[in-house]
Image (cartoon, rainbow, N blue to C red; front, side, top):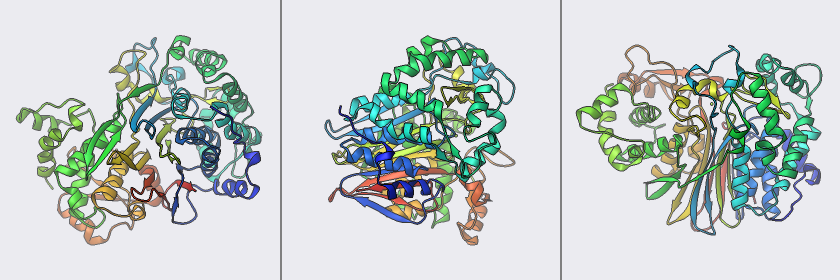
Length: 560
């Protein structure tokens, strides 16, 4: 490990002004292919964080160093709203030295003392401490960087600390978040103090938001390592604050937390190997299950879904089915029973499972995060997703050391009841890396409500349909219908949400005639429903790294 100076105070003035101006918008200003011969960074929502990641690479850092720098900076620039230092992360990493792929799960742990998770309250019903879980983000970042990084960990915190101390200009997006979530932050003295770090008023667009207490926390982490947040001062404050609000946190819950290294799961698709997270991760299973079904139903040999209504019909049914994950709908369970089929979690990612279940799909009648992809000059590849895993800032109002503590247990009672107290909570984050001939050629990290559908459509478009990356990224998103089943809908044939003006009237009429009703969603509604992916590709022959920026997506990228 060696030191680097990543402080924004040393960045070229014009570049710093540019990225801070871009930070005020969630969309890149124009569509562009971004490419470089040495390294590539792509990440959601924060041009400042992308610039910090490039700086880490240029000073000799690896993909792990850059990914860590980006993630740490994203939390500060997002003001802890949709990502958090008290959040979670999931990683798939290709190490060029060993030529192996690795999976890292730094998800939530439950509390050993929480023995009645089904009674964890929802909504504004008090006992906010019971809605919290043991965070894994900082432990995961350190574990990734310790294994694959070259820079000193403290160096990677410099951009986050600098912007915490010097302030982040509140964007229109963040101002909207503050306006809608102020009652939750203001519920406690610590939350109210956090809320007013731009002055006595509710932060508005253009305000400078200073995070002095957060900077102190991050400086302690830089000096002591992340143990400060698991065995040190922050951990003690966290346990005290959670217990005061009725939660069952104990120091041993944080002290014993360990990120989990797993073998990635994989399948083959279109002459490539697709690697997704292993372990208890559910999102990775869903991606691989979808690809196997796409292949068995020969959807990869059909016209792209945005050009052929029949492909759209079959693909939407398939994706609706895999989103059920371990919660098999009654129709599918009966289909399995009649045919003597019984599939475990691991069976779901096999080709045999796809062959067994595809006839059901053919015969059926007519949460907030950031994503990061980094490719470095050595050929290491990081696909990382990290999340607050709830609404912006959560509902607890608990703030510890300048870090708002989210409420992910408030909607995961069923998952918590299915595991032992103190165990890892399965998560749905599903970054993937694709290889061909043992070399990485594509990395995707996706966030958002429809992240499984978004990842699957990009893999289908690039690998199965052989479309160029820009065409795929600019195609209409596939939107998952989370609403309760209604009318004559089945678990698989649901009303499909479609972006307004994305398809011509004949396309939609044919879908309706085939038994697939549609409902148009406005541009604003689409932003809340869609999955948002960042993608990095590596040309197998030239080694050129490429990504895409488009005003339709939240992703920013840079390369050299």
